[in-house]
Amino acid sequence: MKRIAALLGKELSDVRANPALFVPAVITGVVSIVMPFLIAVAVPYVTGERLSDSSDFRIALEMYREQPATRQLDAEGAIQAMIFQQFLILLVLTPVAGAMSVAAYAVVGEKQARTLEPLLATPITTFELLAAKVLGALIPGIILVAGCFALYVAGAIVFAHAGVYRTLFFPRALLTIFLLGPLAALAALQMAVCVSSRVNDARSAQQIGALVILPISALLVAEFTNNFQLTSAVILQICAALAALNLALMTIGIRLFDRESILTRWK
Amino acid sequence: MAALVASHLTRRFDSRVAVDDLSFELARGEIFALLGPNGAGKTTTLRMLAHLIRPTSGSVQVDGHIGFLTEAPGLWDRLTVKQNLLVYAKLHGLDNPARAVDEALDLFDIAARKNDRAAQLSKGLKQRVALARTLLHRPDIVLLDEPTSGLDPESAREVRELILHLRHENRAVLISTHNLDEVQRVADRVAVLRSRLVALDTPAALRTRLFGSRLLITLSGDAARFSDTLRSTVSDIRANGRTLSIGVTDVEHTAPVIVRLLVEAGASVVSVLPEEAPLEDVYLRLLAGDEP
Image (cartoon, chains in turn blue, orange):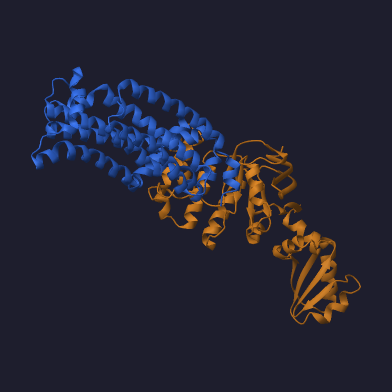
């Protein structure tokens, strides 16, 4: 654990010294915060048309008003709550986008900078090395998403109908942000680090790791089209699958990390 | 007992043999140089000794901890000098990492730059920080891959002094290098490698083996006219201006005889010195397989 902490400290110092690495994540975070406010607050305000008058939202409104937790909201508030809930999935992409460039660079970057060989000459194990690399990318991503979530809630308090912000503290919302998000990000980062230890180019790792965005995007689309309800139970099932995937990825990562090949065959 | 014993080390990469049946021992307090052209297997040997890669066959026995200075300093550019060292002190599990780093900063005279980012350092200073990092955990055996490569003469001299300091601390030091001048200045023994071990001995013994012992005698006047005087005693005589270069088998016995003969013949002897063939000549002859 001490060696993981030591290398993790280095990774975090490195990120602090190069905050530009997180520009994509900040952009993703800003977009995921601004979009629902544009749809649920700004557009109705500018056009003077209430969302609850639109037939497009009628089925969604009925579904949402049936839930005891949202029954006390007025019709406009219920639709806003629904929109804010659905866009939470977009917020999950923030740590993935942010940490991907860091994770993709994790091993291949050390090799290119010729800093890997002295590191491997220490008693550090492959598990410790990979764990520190993954956490070094994940922790800033989670901090960023927590910050984005705080802004999201603050925006809902200020701009949305009364009581809408409370729906952001429902188990479904909290599970999405603080369990599904980190687990999805962890899977993406582990894929990136695995690939990073087998390729000569950080971009390859970045592209393959980014594949995790596809199933998350599919969830978002399925929710928008009302084909799928992301309930707490469903989120927990997805999280269990992601946890298993993460364990498998760590095992695969350790096996793929061939110190000899990395030192002797990479140029 | 030797600090490090390499026995019949062989390493293949597919069909290519990088190191072939290499054996040697490294003693404490010894500086051992591994010389060889590019691709001779020096770095592969060091990596096997440092347990970074496995030998295809053969073994390495080590008595103590190893410190490995890689060919590139390998510092994290965005971290400060102190941060770089602190991470390694923790990775080595030192009891008091902060104190170990402070001591290293003082020992290597880099305390004034401890808060500078590694990217801001000169090449020589980076190498000094890398050397400090290599020695943080007080290794008994120090492996140095091209420690003065690309350094200016002043920086190279500083690194050489640090290497000599390691010998005073009774550590076993192995240097891989192309730099013959460096070997001449610091090495106790030299191994010439070209996949296989070509030669292994002290620099002086290698010179003698290849070129024999020679005396360089400087006279006050033309030296050629005294050559015949010496023919009865020595046969290998080369006169050049005021100097005579004389091949001898036993310097201690022959030198006084030669000097006496010269003085009796009326020569004014200015100096008598053992003549050393440049190590470069020794190295090139060994690599050319031109050994008598």
